[in-house]
Length: 114
Image (cartoon, rainbow, N blue to C red; front, side, top):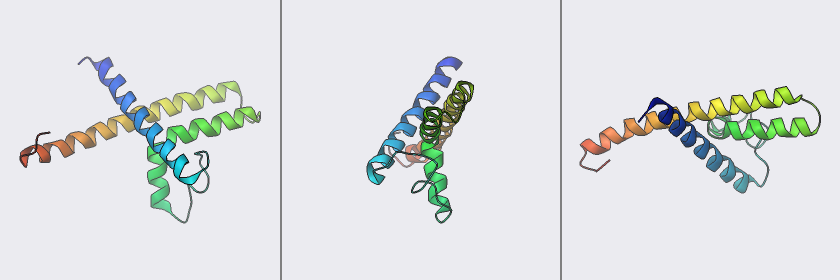
């Protein structure tokens, strides 16, 4: 696989997991995903960290679009938030692929097909 295909695959994995996690969180909580309660809370730091790591790009885009609709940020800042969310999704995909490859090695050595 070429380097560009690996990057696109990692981005796709990150974007998929981000979308699935964000959609599941929205269904469970009944509110739009954002960097606010009930998703991010100082009382539940570990839960907030996991939620932000998994659905952070989704949260960032939602908050940026809301801020743009309310004319709180410029179009350039909206594009900057979009680029940041894309890089975040790529990094999430790389981390998840690395975790999956580390988990697959012990499963293969235990007699389970990877």
